[in-house]
Length: 164
Image 1 (tube, rainbow, N blue to C red):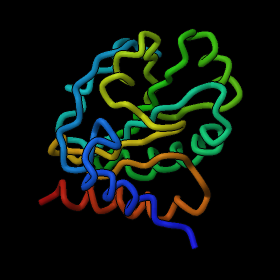
Image 2 (cartoon, helix red, strand yellow; image 1 turned 120 degrees about the horizontal axis):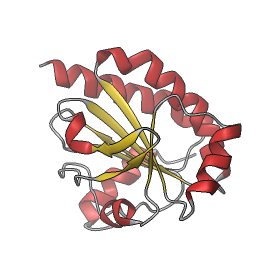
Image 3 (tube, rainbow, N blue to C red; image 1 turned 60 degrees about the vertical axis):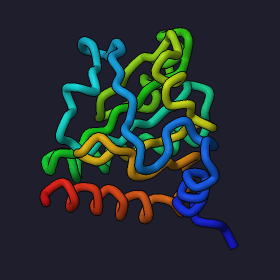
Image 4 (cartoon, rainbow, N blue to C red; image 1 turned 90 degrees about the horizontal axis):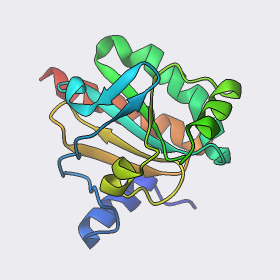
């Protein structure tokens, strides 16, 4: 029986600093280059944001992109924004990945590693669901088909909470 990744993230929160950004803490601000100008977390204030750290060499990342594209299309009109933050040191490596695995969401290039340093992802991919209030709601490590429904429910819950 597989433990819920959400229970693991919640347990990490209770344990202390297993993740730099625990559930219930404010998400760090960031500004990094994107495909069409700088990507600033401040520009997403009031939105539900899914920050996904990925890398060109990450096989599960390749599987997560179609799902993230679907989620962006489905929930974007309701105030949902996905930001895929590549941790590749060379932008060309990320661009090569994106040529074969397109992103229909915002992509940010953290070639300096500063954003990853503030979030401290524990694997590839690691995602942070941030509520409209700027607080981390969910930390999710990895990506498996079996996670999709739980992740989508978390997105829906965050969007519902944002309306209140």
